[in-house]
Image (cartoon, rainbow, N blue to C red; front, side):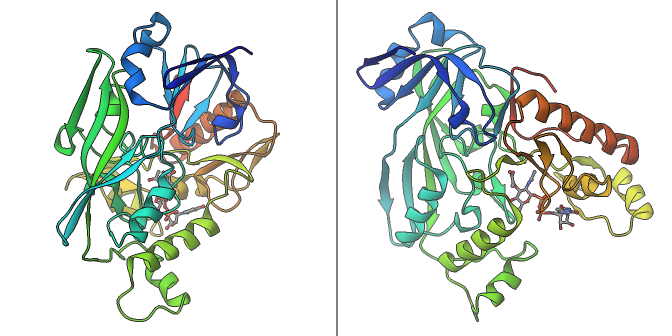
Length: 351
Ligand code: EPU
């Protein structure tokens, strides 16, 4: 393994990525570039190997599955500054570099008396990855707080700033996911509030606050604590058991199809979809009904605590996990007539 240093970056040839994906599967990249200064990006993308469309920008590796080795160079941003840009006593504008760990950033905002991200506590990954799949949990999506995304545009070789309204944010989706080879997110600016309006609509948060002994209006940090407790209970810790959170997106189907399914399965959870004529189904429930919870094929398995989470019990390969995911999706299709799709990015395979 050869390592070379430049100004603001480090290059390793034939790098192992096992510790850079939370599934913990074996994978290599012909070249790993770790950039500590985004000013190095124009120089780096001057090299043919990085300019190639198969260059992969890697955040915390918590939302991807290596079904094989990375086909091209892998770029990881190791930038970690957080700055308060504006603060008028009511709202504040905060910029965080792409390489900041997401949960550390949430804790920073809470420590500075800023609300808006508390429901998104403990999500693995980095700030730079957050807008890509528009991370969401417990009734809140990150798009609600994002004001601007700063990025390096690989097609023009320039730095750009995109307003949230230009990012095509939708459920687990964005411009960055739709056009994956164009932008390298370098930093995100968030509009946060000094006045806290709790968002407790999602099932379980109020119960958790009660169990914590919180009475009356909770503080933002208490809501974050409730979310952390729920997540710890339901979702396996990737440092203990390899996983990438939800492996499938909750499917959005026509309202008529959802109503027909509900008639046959009165206990089926049903959420509002993107509009009046669509509904969001619970992929976890569909998978659970097909009997997959706790299932294991060798070291590739389904969490015993949450049917939506695929886990690596040790030596599963990306191909093993993908094969299991395909069997799960086929069984949901056969039983309910609903197609479910992976949430993580697949590297080296198509769904
Ligand atoms: N359910 C089951 N079996 C299970 C788990 C859940 O039937 O094993 C049913 C229950 O009826 C439950 C419902 O599914 O009420 C929903 O479960 P949960 O509240 O855990 O939410 P989810 O829809 O499975 C989504 C996100 C999570 C996020 C939670 C909380 C997606 C793909 N996943 O999961 O995000 O933490 O809501 O908001 O939208 C992630 O994206 O990696 C992730 C963990």
